[in-house]
Structure formats: structure tokens, C-alpha cells
Length: 130
Image 1 (cartoon, rainbow, N blue to C red):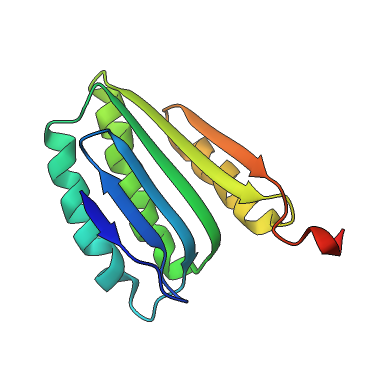
Image 2: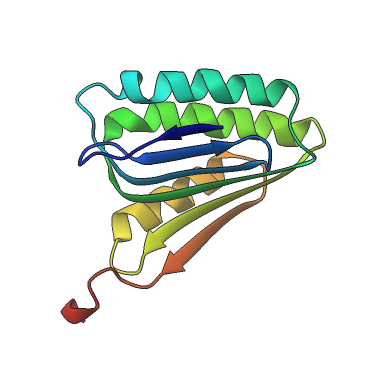
């Protein structure tokens, strides 16, 4: 497994190949997103060579910069490749009820890839604002 603790600018990353469950959550606006995501992409690429029968990848961003998009896109591309090789894949893109931008990003990504992709609303993180 690969585990990377979050910082104020980087997400928590959990890559659990033994169970086929992968999560990226939090903020993603590092100075250099390549330093954060390239090791993750390289690690996940090895998983794609011998994936489990079912792979679930969850994205729970609060915010991410455009610079992270290309690297996130690469993860989706690899997930789609697993799916195209007749494995079960499920992507879950979570967004806070008060975060239209992350919601729209999830819809956009879901329209770009041919694989099961759920865009899931979770309660607002600031219910006192309602």
C-alpha cells in the first residue's frame, strides 16, 4: 500500500492494492503537482499490470488547481484501461453540496471516460452557512 499524508496544499492519498481501493482526498494545489502525483501515477501503473477483479477509486477533493488536472486525468486514463480490459472499475467523485466547481469537474470528467463513474453529493462542510 501507498499512503501519503495530507498537507494544507496536498491531498491525502491511500493506494490499497490488496483490496483494490484507492482514495485521494483534500486539497490539491501544490507548488509542483508533478512531485505529488508522478510517484502515485508510477505506483498505480504497476497496479494496472495485475489489477484485482474489482477496482474502486474515490476522489474527494475540496479544491484543486488546474495544474493538477492533467495528472488526475492520467489516473482516469489508467482506470479506463483497466475497465477496457474487462475488469470491474468504479470511480466515485464526491463533492460537497456547496461546491459547484468540484461538482462540475466531476461531471466533466465523467463525460470524458467510458467507465462506471458516480458523481456523489455529500453534505455541505459548512452547514451553518445554510
